[in-house]
Amino acid sequence: MATIQVPGQMPGQVPARVPAVPPPRADQAQPGGQAQPGGPRWRAAELIAGRAENPHTRTLTFDVPGWPGHLPGQHVDVRVTGDDGYQASRSYSLAAPASGDRVELTVQRLRDGEVSPYLVDAMPAGASLQILGPAGGWFVAPPAGAPDPVLLIAGGIGIVPLMAMLRARRGAGGTAPVRLLYSLRSPEWLCYASELRGDPAVTVAYTRLAPLGHPRPAARLTAAEISARGLDPADEPVCYVCGPNGFVDAMTAMLTRLGHDPARIRTERFAASAGLALTRT
Ligand SMILES: Cc1cc2nc3c(=O)[nH]c(=O)nc-3n(C[C@H](O)[C@H](O)[C@H](O)COP(=O)(O)OP(=O)(O)OC[C@H]3O[C@@H](n4cnc5c(N)ncnc54)[C@H](O)[C@@H]3O)c2cc1C
Image (cartoon, rainbow, N blue to C red):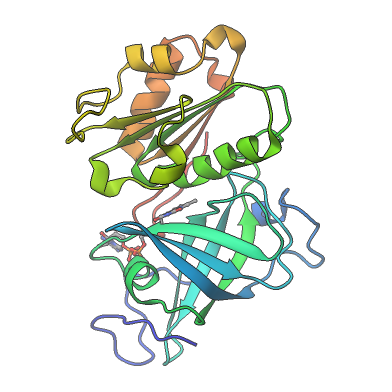
């Protein structure tokens, strides 16, 4: 078992700001592949590969024997354990569609965070942690071959569950329209560059610094752009928005103003700390 560094912590002492390991939630029994007799449980997950997406972000591929499968959009809880038995858990979205015992996560480092620096910078191949899930039955894409058009809007690391949805659609060769609008600060934060580059269904919107030759200047996404690069509300797409709170609020308001049915807008917010509530609408 790998060691995690917990700054300022005495052996056996749980820092006040770290929430206790949460019990399995009711929604963890919701759709995610095979039924899990006795409910979801923590499973050992061995890191078999790590890939830098950019200087801040790493995609980690785990082998999780007995993984029951999952749906694009679902997430897991990850639990790391220090040599002294100290444990911390955080939620991470599944970055890729189900593929046997493989589980792929993409984690962005929060410099003063507790768990993400370990996952991005320190966890070596061959080390293990524990994974609970899959969780979430609402922020889940329609089946890959379904006729529903899908509009995906990501803010920063909120791209992760939407990438799983995009990959599932692409993998199934579905013909229903899909669009991705991906807002991020600058190229140094871009994830999945080689898969997204040149895809006409994808709009990458840099907000602070756009690379030379990028088809749009650095600016926040506007309603006009969502209208032009997204999907027509008349086609009744299912809209998925994921990112920080302010971004999700802004995008939801724009979608509604553009005429998208609020009942077809699904949101997920990545709380900054596991102690903060996660809201889905
Ligand atoms: C459903 C879901 C899916 C997610 N998916 C992803 C994903 O795919 N990729 C990804 O990178 N992240 C994802 N996240 C976010 C992830 O769960 C973590 O919140 C993130 O990695 C930070 O964890 P950390 O341990 O590094 O930081 P933490 O130690 O949790 O700290 C987070 C921030 O909060 C501050 N903080 C912590 N506790 C307190 C306190 N008590 N008072 C004041 N400030 C405090 C810290 O200083 C820091 O700035 C997801 C979150 C949710 C809820």
